[in-house]
Each structure stands twice: as structure tokens, then as C-alpha cells.
Length: 333
Image 1 (spheres, rainbow, N blue to C red):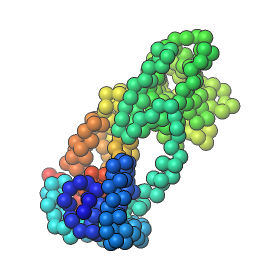
Image 2 (image 1 turned 180 degrees about the vertical axis):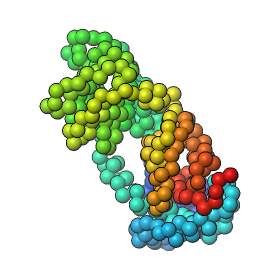
Image 3 (image 1 turned 135 degrees about the horizontal axis):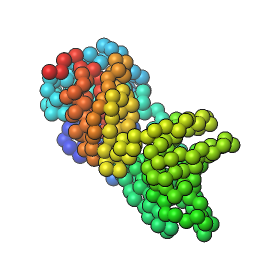
């Protein structure tokens, strides 16, 4: 029987179907994994039925009650869940509970894939890349980024469709260098600057010289070195602020820096650098926990270990793609 992780984890049809469900629903999925999934489905008449049953269970439970959370905690051994050798029945229950929790956060996954913009340059989740344009300008693309560029003898026009990029612009007064993000246009004035676009806002941070930002029909605003400005798709334009350049540009050294930031915000940031899903079991008290530290984006296993050591939380990893976080009832020493 082909298990999606390629290991002899619980060798039953039901548990293998659950593992395939977690893999296929949380992605990304490689062509080889898709092929092995198809082979597993066709290998036995019971396999499609088991997978459909796992899907029904997933859809039937759209959240966990506090009692469910306590049951999950009781099913875990006292030592770290990553090193657990818990019984098969606990593994099955944990996988099933993970599936039902993931239903809460996974609904937009397939829509996001459909709407993925086809820029000329792209990076995958966790990947970074440096480009050199024909004019000598360089662009560093952060994780999960899509960008397109039109370079002619009259203009240098780029569009950041998704993600984050740092632009070091070669001077050329005859050819304006402009980056469009949503309704906003950023014109370089002999400069180096960072642009990050999220679902609800775009942040422009200038590290050298200045940029000129125009949003719709509003008057343009100049942003100087050491400053940043935010705007939203709704047309809202924020005030120019002092920027923390070390924190804003830490990603270029594969670092994430936090200072007293709420745990949900920190996890949203970390999720940009890893595949799969980070899932809160329904415990609003987790929202009050604060995180301070500097972490390596290439060693996020250390990040999760540090969280578990410093905060009253437990972390469970399933199939290396799904991480569940919930408040521990055991006080940290």
C-alpha cells in the first residue's frame, strides 16, 4: 500500500486515506505525489471509498469545541509530540481531528490556486531569488512572489502581482522605473526600496534616496530613505512613517524579527515561508500571547521548538505539513 509520506506509518486503508487527504488538501503537491495518489486509488476498490469517507468526516466537523481540545491534549504523551511513539489509535484520532480543524482554514486554498497571477518571474513558498534586469537594476524576490516586467527604450515598467521584492534601481533619467501594485504606482527617484503586498495592504519601505507614490487620482507623495508608507486596495492611503529597516529587510538575510507581536500575527508571517497550514485549535486565549525574537526562515523547526519552550502552548505536526497549536494545561518551568 502506497503511503503518501513514503513510510510504513499506520498501514491501514483508513489511516492511509486520511494521510492522503491531509496531503492533497494542504499542498503543494508534486507531480510524483499526484501519480502515487492515483495509483493508490486504483490499486484496490476499497481505496476510493475510504478516501470519500475521510472527505465526509472532514466536511462534517467544521470546528472543535473546548472538550475536543481537551481530548486532543489527553491523547498526547507528556513528552514532545514530535518525538512521540503514541499508539496507532491516537495517531488515527489526531489525524482525523486535524482534518476537521483544517476545514476552518482551508476553504480558500483552491480559489487561491485558480487566481494565481502569471507574472514573468516567480518564487515558490520558501524560495528567494535575485534577478538582474537588462538595465543593470537588481530585484530580490522574497517567498511566494510573482512579478512581471516590461523594459523598453522608453520605460521600465514592472508589476508586483503578489508577495515581496526589493528593488535596487540603476539610474537612467530617460527611462522612468515604475512598480505598479494594485491601484498604486511607485516611481523610483534613484533609489533602493522594498515593496510588500498582502491581501489587505501594500507597504513601501525606502532604504536609499526616495520614491514617489501615486494612488489612483490622489496627489503623489514622496517617501524618503528610512521611511515607509502603506496603502490599501480600498483606496486608503496612510501617512509617511519612520521605518524599522532592520526588521523590514531582515528577510534578505533569511531572518524574521519580532518584538512583542501577537502570536497570530507571527504565525501569519511564518506561514509565508512554509508549505501546508498552521492551525489554531479554537482557543481565543492564544491571541494574547506575545512573541519576541529573531528566527531563521530556513530553519523554521527551531522557531516552533522555541515557541513551545517559551509559551504555554503545545504543537503537533502531522505529515510534516499541518501544524496544530493549542494552549497547554501544563505550566512551563
